[in-house]
Amino acid sequence: MPIYLFWGEDDFAIAQEVNKLRDRVLDPNWSQFNYDKISGDQAMATIDALNQAMTPVFGIGERLIWIVESTVTQQCPDDVFSQLQRILPAIPETSHLLLTSSNKPDKRLKSTKLLEKYAKVQEFSPISPWNTDQLINQVRRIAQEIGVKLTPNASQLMAELVGNNTRQLWNELEKLRLYHGDQTTVLDTNIITTLVNSNTQNSLQLAQAIRNGQTDNALQLIADLISRNEPALKIVATLVGQFRTWAIIKLKIESGEKDEKAIAAAADIPNPKRIYFLRKELQTCSGQQLLKTFPLLLGLEFSLKRGGDSLETLQIKVIELCQLFQ
Image 1: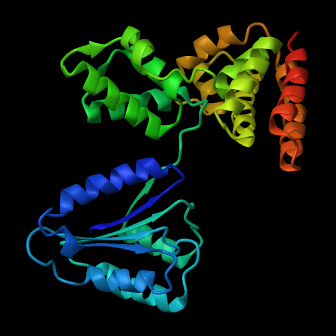
Image 2: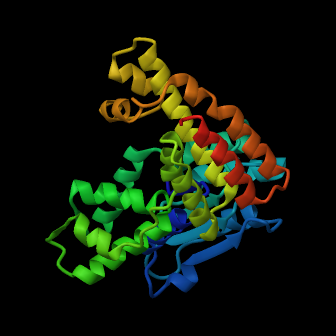
């Protein structure tokens, strides 16, 4: 049944998926008659969209009705839910009803459960910056879609440079495609280093600098991140996630656990092979050192939420964090 629910904070990825759906179902010569984009904050948005979905296609192609920032998975009046119950099963195959939202659906609602029954539900949340495997897979997937061939090392370097910024990843891969032209050649790290904007000053590198006790390097990374308008709370969230992963792995190792699959499962790492490399990375620190970072990170988050100056607050706490590993 042609009903879709796209949700998540990655608005660029949602927009890309919407464009693909629109290109697939609409005839360009008849799109002005068969395409409706409705703002979800309108009082009758859902009812209007359901009515449009039941309207026959005009001319050639199919019909697409898109509710932007739909609210039915957050709150749904009884009269709207009744209409959803009645109309969703009856929507013709030639009509495509799309609901998008930046908010996670409330699974307790009857309307959410109903949509899960009839709709294709797809999440578009940014990948966690510390989830290297998923970031690399995203690079490979989008590169294949755009028509750029990358070596494994090039894919890894792209993930390190761009992180979870989907918009930048698309733009950089498009730039590589246009610059190189030949879609048969596999691109290596040298061309990536030359052409891709080097956002190497990222929060993961900051975490590594702290873990290595490199105060000067960590302070420089903070200055670079803030100068690029990176949100301070986002930096903290990445640090918390990274140190949590490291702490779980190190404590498991110190407890005598040798099964890499068990360690990976405990740390929410999809690829157990990464544990071999993480063991080496964590040789110079202890589980207790890693655990001591959490009160400091909690204090950092609290200070920022209380309105503390981003740069000054980060600098003070990062110096304290680095001292744990010196």
